[in-house]
Image (cartoon, rainbow, N blue to C red; front, side, top):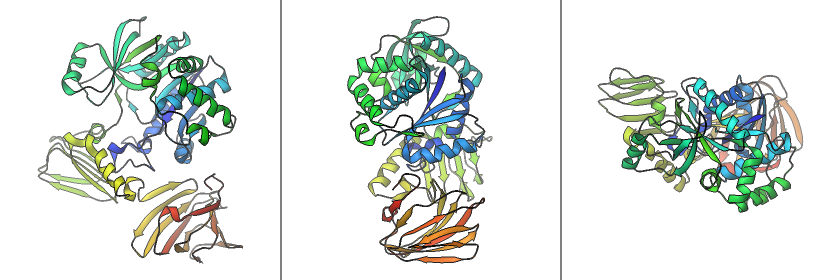
Length: 471
């Protein structure tokens, strides 16, 4: 049995302002209309020997990922292992391997796929996975190595050795990201493949290799697994014991030191979508090399990528730029320096600016809210609460709230009183009052929330009860 394991984490800071910590790269919607996470799920189900998948992600991303899977066309049984915090790929893969052994036995195979990569040639990908599966069944730790299309300094490389059957080669070494001259030599030699972070092995084989080569990680993850509720759905790793796990990549922890390792070369139109340069390459150009997603007018401009969500973007006489507008933030960068966008996020984080973390629209387990106004003396939001959605029982010390129902019917609790509100009805919630809102109907409830006071941060939420486990 082959179980796809999707690793979904990381902030994707090089793709700010679209990718942010609370809504990272896997949830970016591309030109196809699908998010990277949906595309990865489709790819996983196309090669699996069952309709079962396992996603390892952070607890903060669970509800968003679950809802995305449910809303997409992907038909399968989607299971989750939730990490209390990111500890890189080695602990995530070890935890997934324990789950697979527990559910399907030690000989079950796992196909590890990052959630935020793109593959265009599914025929070539399927063929490579079939070859990797055969090797994994024979206890090889197997990588899918991407055939390079140019000298790239942003990826790690795999040096391939002698043939290991008709479709694979022995791995001689893993190589870190090179400088430009070294990358050119790698590309021209034909011996090197890009390391795309895609692996296939028996669950028992990777656990055995980890016990031999990274025993501290293996022991810590095993103890964490034993301390967790193993049959829960989703399965949450025990926070206290997981905090003792050393953060490390699977490359450093195991693959660079393992003896029985192989690589299957694959030319499948792979991209890690790691920069705005890579995003722009997904779109067709005009005669002057410009690419536009959304509404854009470019006059006497060349080699420029424009992406806007709600506003018209106009540019005159520019060359070789990336311009991205998300409504609450605008990025303007040279295409040649698109990899440096991370430094913007670092500075925003240093300033504790909300745009490093949140979009204007923030997704929650119960629905979403959009910030309409954020001033010193008030904050206005539009809440959308899906059927069955329940806000936590909470209170605030620094602000009062005024809710107006725009559409739908809401069940509201303020203090010890519970009542229903319909369209055009309102309720005032004084600071310090316990309150909660619930949608017991069959259509979305839309609320305008006006906050007044002197502080409106999300940390002024004291949750006493929460059906989503956030209290």
